[in-house]
Image (cartoon, rainbow, N blue to C red; front, side, top):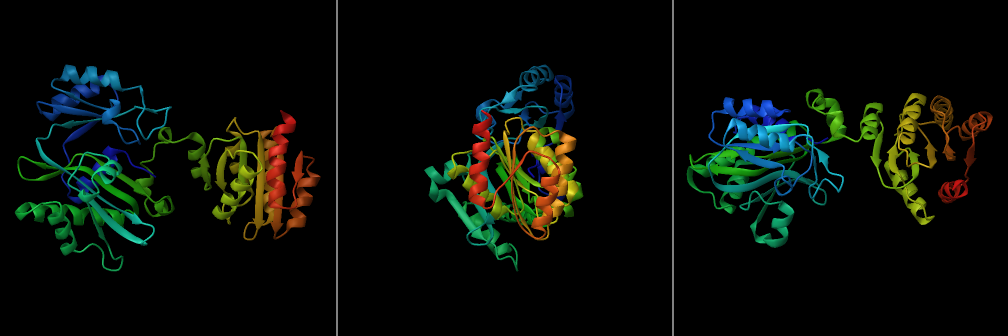
Length: 389
């Protein structure tokens, strides 16, 4: 789950990391009022979208009066912002963060994330703040500073000082930087984040550091421990099907094909999508109902699948273990009747209560095609679309 900039900055502020004073606005009038309340000669209007590259796409503007702020807001609100990370369809701008202007001398990049190969957190920092870190790494790799964190001990002060020196920060400023970095590490740990990023971290003319922008992504699997963060999710920021799937407790990722996939287990999902591709088809999604699903979960999962109008066939590939095949079958029959399924369904069952599951499906009278193997299931799913074309 990704947080908006204003949400991430609130977490920074509560932890003691300085952020600019700002207000959220969803109308031009609120933007003008924010200018008056900030009492700053210049303010920055920033589109609150979950995609980077806003500045180059017109998602960041400045204003020198309440009138200018209102005009800029009217130009930004309601439009779809197309950035390098949003895709060609863009992201709708519904909210703006209006912040006081900050006199900046230098900008730095600081982030803590997980290095999957090293299997430990890593601090990534650069003296080229404000740029996308990928661009910096490509053009100026010597400007990237990395420091790995031992999970048992956490980020140590001497490591934070080493990073400060690597960025050319000295004297009292180095200690202030160390304080910011250690607090960012606390946020990373306590909130179960996948990434905690400040870009840019600005050194001001007053010799202090201020987080001008921040990005945070929390591990979805840890949301059960963070109800306060989970409440920050806005359904309007998500694909409706992905939101429904999250509420139903299933893992769903939308893809570009027309064959809906329902499996139990991420590895089985990957193998199923590969088989569809090898048979000449295109998967429409990755949907993993998990091992503990019941008939209700199966019902909701199929509802998510058929809500995608591009889906012309559904492939159900289940290895019965904790999720028994008869429970799966009951869920499919219930969903088919409630949703009035009109697309062909290919089912491949294996494992616990396979015979009972197949009997429930055969007795239902539904137009279900049974496959004996995974490869056959993939080929049948592709053929079922071609035969209906």
